[in-house]
Structures are given as C-alpha cells and as structure tokens.
Length: 260
Image 1 (tube, helix red, strand yellow):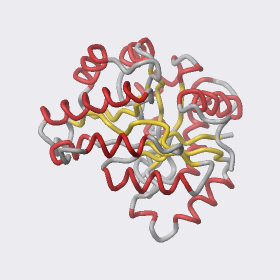
Image 2 (cartoon, rainbow, N blue to C red):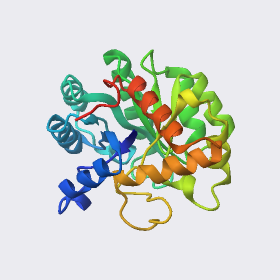
Image 3 (cartoon, rainbow, N blue to C red):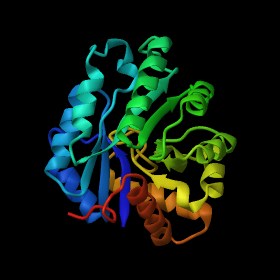
C-alpha cells in the first residue's frame, strides 16, 4: 500500500498520457494520491480529476508564485471548492524565497489568509517552503493551523526544524531529493522522524528520484522514495509504506488509503 501525498497530475506534462500514468501508478501499488494545486484554475482541475477517481483526492490553494496576482475574491472561490467532498486540504500554500516570483510581503499575506481559511474550514494545510524556513516557522508559530494540522511537503529543512513542526502538529513529507547521494540532512530527518509523522510523495512531474533524476516524475516512483526511507530507517519497505499510508489516511481523513 502506497500513498503519494503530493502530485500535480493536472500539469500539462501529463496531457498526452495521463491515463497511462495513472495505470502505472496502480500497477506499482499506489492506492491513493493527493493532487495539489497552485492557482485557481489548477484547483478546479484537481477537484474535477479527483471527482472522477475515488482513489485520488484534491488539495486547493494558491502557490506563493501566484500570490502577487490573486483576484480579490480568491478566498471565496477556494472556500467553494473546499466544500466539494473530494477536496481534503488547502494547498499548496507557503513561501518561496528562492525564485521570488511574487513580492515577499504579498506571499506572506496570501499565506496567512489561506492558513486562516484552513482553520475556518477545519482542513489540513499543505505547505511549500523554499529558502524561507525562518519566516515559515515564525508565521506558523504565530498563526497556527488548528486541530486539522498540516503537511510540510517535500521537506528540505533540518532535523531541528522538523522536530518543531511535529510539535506544531505537522506531518513531514519526503520526496525524491531524499534519494539523492548528497542528501545527508534529509537522511537524518528520515531516520529520526517519529513513524506516525512520516509521509512520502513524488511532487510529480518534478523532482524525480534516483535513478530517474532529471526526467519527468510520476506517482509510480513514490515506491523509490519509500524504499530509500525504509533503508535509512532499517525497516522493511512494506512496513514503511503501510505506516506512511496510515498517516496519510489520518491527516487527510481518507477512508483507509482511498481505494478505487
């Protein structure tokens, strides 16, 4: 049992073979996918895709890259989408100080507004954090996420940051970079995380794991992430995958791991 807790299946890179990608995921043992969005159009597309597949669920949110261009009523649109039964989280939201495609003050404003929306709706958040560790922690410590908790997706911080996020009610999701040869900090996080707070993901079509690094990623490759993390934790891959799937079912309130 494998759950890919972060994918972008509505990305145009999958337009030519989306059905085949989903079939390969099923063949690889993937029983659930959380399909995250990054703007209002992709949020609607993610919800529609999930509506047609019982084993795929959606997260709706505004990525920090688009924070500087959100329409005035964007929260109302997200609120309406979140009312759909296939939507299980607000995300992905957060801060990106690496590309800085939106002014940082706007990123922080939109991030905080969506944190408040998630608290209002009692939904977990899925957070994007790139080169913004200090501000992410500061805002989360100040604003909070409510009882529904959240996921730090494609985690890239230190063990100390991961420990604080767990204290704040977060799950830590590891992606393809944990398979990279120089990922020493991620390896430490993978070894030390409490088993009940660990998730695995692909972030496809991005960040393909070894040996597919540099190529298009897809949900079937979540097995390679799970195998690497299992090796670091010195447990069987089946045990790691089962624990991560149970964690995904808990944070996203899935029926088991969402079977077709």
